[in-house]
Amino acid sequence: MDSAYLIEVASMLLRWLHLIVGIAWIGSSFYFVWLDNSIKPPTDPKLREAGVGGELWAMHAGGFYNPQKYLVAPKELPKELHFFFWPSYSTWITGFLLISVLYYFQAATWMVDPAVAQISPTVSVLIGLGTLAGGWIVYDLLSRLLIERSQLVFAVIYTLFVGAVTWALMHLLAGRAAYIHVGAMIATTMSGNVFFIIIPNQRKLVAAMKRGEAPDPALGKKAKQRSVHNNYLTLPVLFSMISNHYAFTYSHAHGWLMLMLIMLSAVLIRHFFNLKHKGEWRWEYPIAGGLILLATLWWTAPAPVVRDTAKPVPTLSQVMPVVEARCAACHAEKPTMMPSAPGGVMLDTEARIRQHAQRIYARTTQTKDMPLGNVTNITEEERALITGWYLGGTK
Image (tube, rainbow, N blue to C red; front, side, top):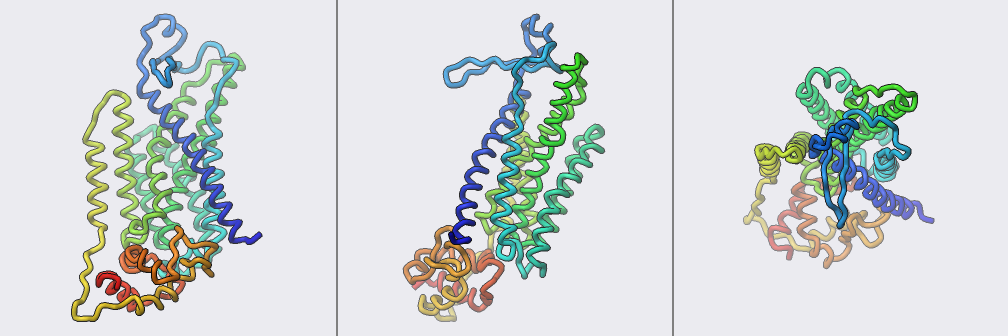
């Protein structure tokens, strides 16, 4: 079986599975944060005597539910106790396999951009792997040193760290790979919280009860802190995961700052919902987040291009050879540089070139992220030719 086809199949299946298990993880994470923020002290004396610190009533799908949370632990360990860790582990595993298939196994195409840095595919992969591991190490160290002293100081320093990593990756890797690795670094940190802190602390609590000892409340508090961190990191990760569809972000001259501002807006909006669960309607947070997002998109918008009317309008017959030489190696019914045309966009006939004229113009002359890594060596004169043709009406 053709290796290119196998890569495509592996990518499809892994992406699908990654999405499924990711939804399961995010869903349970959001639910438990909502639950913690929504519960109220019980009014029933029996519940308070049993150690219940909060409860609520909810209805879903025609059924009544009454979840309860104990201050530390129940007096007796229940026979059946559910742990929530496989969604996290499976999300990270499928994500790592997916980034390996899409980026590490095709590093020369997707990781390296000679216009950014002259590095080998092997070095680019090592940078990617080092980012994942180093991100967790730095985050965990900062958490251990600063969380008990000041949540705000921790948040500021960690944000500066993520910004520094983003800036560095944008100067080492192709923009698309840089964005995806910032998200993968944060996602690795989230799974690291589950694997190294949350689940081990939960198991220590259970083990203490099995020995007949009083469980240490500090273990639960620390696990809860890391869980809340994961909640705030979720939306920034999700944006990084979808950013590969929007070249105007990672191809921008200040793409690193653009990513940080978008992530900041997401954190502010998430904070609004977390406060809302507690009954606090703090509209300044989503307003600030929305304004940051809109201001970022306005600031990074490409300047209007005006056609030079002194020059004749290029025709399709003039543009066709450029597209064939610079684009059709990937975007064709039978591409030579890709297993299949990315996004199903084929540019190997006049009709197809006219059909995708707007996309050709946007990606070759506005964002200039195509051809990928300029592997086909398109010139500025050729980009200008495409611009004149598009603005002149694509005749």
